[in-house]
Image (cartoon, rainbow, N blue to C red; front, side, top):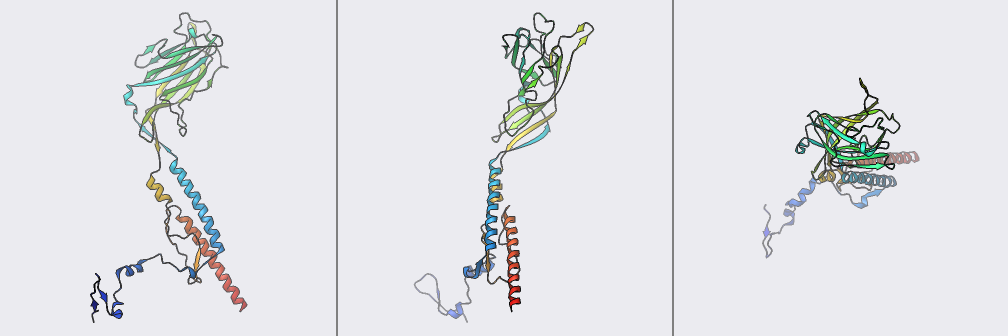
Length: 343
């Protein structure tokens, strides 16, 4: 038999035989069979104190994880890498140098800066972008200078070579306040040797001794979140102190900075965790119920189900659910044993 349909003034037909139409289940009702998150009526569930305690602890732990991930998302991460290349190709083969040094026992008119390198450069008494500040009522001198060097091995030294009259016993005791190469980087999370000689104190050394500082300069690139790059240089240092002699007698002391460049470049890059990764990490799928409720129909069963999946904190819910299920199952078993003993 076919169902009899009655067409009225309504747009859709109406079935006149309910018994026959019962077999014609609408499509939306058929889809409910695929629901894996079945809803249990509230009257068929019972809350437990153990489940409440575990749920509260679980939520607090989830809050801790969320705040930790949020802090990691907000905080900028500094990633470093090494490669062989000259990063600052637009510099014309030059490196900017900043030197700040105090010689408390040498007059300013005697202090000079000399620059030499393997390309044949030889400057005595370099004075461009330099300043001499008298110390101790003119007894000492503080030399501050900015100059450039070629990207080849060489040296620059503070000495009395440029003085019109050479002193007999120049005192080269000194304090180095600053020696840096390239752009000045003041980044809190990068602890590099950009001013490795800053604070070097040689006031107690032999006044007639020369000082050799052997520098190994490492090109360094810092790239911020916007992609802007700054070029600087780190360096390692080894030093020695000696009194030099030649066949004509004692050599006039000086403060030497001998440098060589490393072929390895260090690059620091600011990175922030992508938003999509943060969302997928901390997003909690709302299919897990924090409160632990037991279905009366489920009491007596020992299945421990995972009601949903969370990204990073899904494990918290899973472990909490397993723990709660074990405690609940053990409690119910103990109650049954007690009831059996009573009977």
